[in-house]
Amino acid sequence: MTIPVPQPLREYALLADGERGAVVGPRGEVAFLCAPQWHDDAVFSSLLGGPGHYSVTPAGTRFVWGGSYLPGTLVWTSRWVTEDGVVESREALAMPADRDRLVLLRRVRVLDGVARLDVVLDCRAGFGAEPMELDGPRGGGAAWLARTGGLHLRWTGADAAVRDDDGALRTTLDLRAGEEHDLVLEIDRHRPDGPPPVPRETWARTLRAWEEAVPRFPDAIAPEEARHSYAVLRGLTSSSGAMVAAVTTSLPERAEAGRNYDYRFAWIRDQCLVGQALAATGGDPLLDGAVAVTTERLLADGDRLHPAYTVDGDPVPKPRTLDLPGFPGGAEVHAGNRVRDQFQLDAYGEALLLLAAADRLGRLDARGWRAAGVAADVVARLRDRPDAGIWELDARQWSHSRLVCAAGLRAIAARPASRACGLDGLDRLADRIVRETSERALHPSGRWQRAPDDPTVDSALLAAALRGGVPPDDARSVATWRAVLSELTEDGYVYRFRPDERPLGEAEGAFLFSGFQLVLACHQQGEHELALRLFERNRGAIGPPGLFTEEFDVRQRQLRGNLPQAFVHGLLIEAAHRLGEGKTCHEGSW
Figure (cartoon, rainbow, N blue to C red):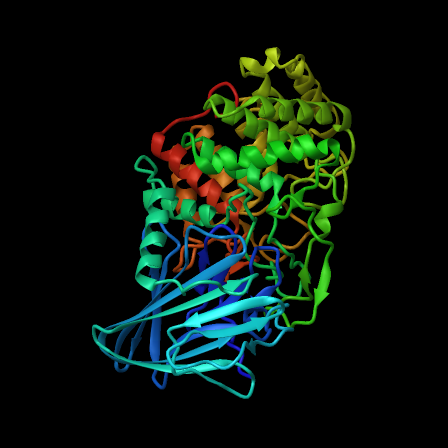
């Protein structure tokens, strides 16, 4: 059995339709895809060393790879320059999407010369544990029908395919300049009913759906990057409004460090951070989805709010270890996440910031205000309870959590409807939280420190001024900003904190979310030229497909961790918008 060799993460592209996502490598291999939904088991898992992939690859010749997205979409085109010509494969998950059924489109076209391509379909549910079984004999010209792990498959465009000894379907395409060939794969919870999709019509609907879904950002300093980042966020957002943090699981943040997690779930914090970023650009359907999800979870769970849920609103499953080799440098492969058992106080502050931002745009209803009341009540009662914090570490009294809660309280108190909704005294509570944090966790140098028992600086503490918990010209805000610049920034990239005495970059990679936070902080402090330089530096971390992971290995120029990381793309949009507008922060949060 041949399993595609893993490549550097910067060379993988993303296909996504809101309900699931596929990771496509430079040899035309769909190397990772969970189906039918984000949190279901993978049917293609070669990215993690498992059996199961779907490949369209130039055969019998050397080639050079490249590729690009159609602007404002997640329609990816792999391009190979071979010894015999130039060939492209356009690929997408069809839209509008169905939760129970995915349609993966591939259109091969020869631009010059001739091309021979090897096509392999080896679909294996259960992260490779369930072989593909043909569903009866196939007549001439009919689609291939198969099953794997309770899922049904239908594959058209591969009439000449044969089944090999490993159970995969294989065929070869021979095409000349100007010729094109369509392949359509359906994976469904139910046996396919009705005729197969017509490629031309399905492509047209998909392109139209992307055109309607993704806005332009003409005022941003990097309008195409902002538009592409929005397309990524749209691709990661389910019809429920819930947005997964990333498509993949168990891609290591650092080789042999054991830090590899499952991010195929919707984090409340991440959803709120992205919603706030999009609110800066104006009203938006993804903002409405973030508000709806956050509102529903606050009203349903209150002080028992989980940090993350499936996109259907269910608790994240407990971690289980999978029998896969994993991505090189990774440790065990997991499905599920231990975060389900954590208390994260900062999520309530981020929720208040999101709801206030929605109200500023006239997009918060009565249920949203009730949710704001729930969040404010939890902060009032539990603000001194140790929590896991933004970095999901051991429970402590993290300064960031309390200061973000103060920012959220101030933001919601500033809304005219706050008093009418019975939310009184929130500014006084915010003042008390800031005062108590200052008494317990102000460093002798005048900056915020991570916790009362941890004197180090943390880039997350920039949020206190960015979101209005403390004024940006407050001495504590300025000292924290300067400390992040001097102690956590190297070569234009920002690290979360110093986990030990090693130099920056040895313990972990630069944190790209923190990089864009520092961009916003520099802009807020009036250092516009520095903000622009840092913006260009951090957006340069992307690979050819324009995707960010959570961390960036500065020395090796490599992406690290799960792909793509939603909140990094959200912060890029906000930073590009703020810098393009030239606006700074006055009297609290933007």
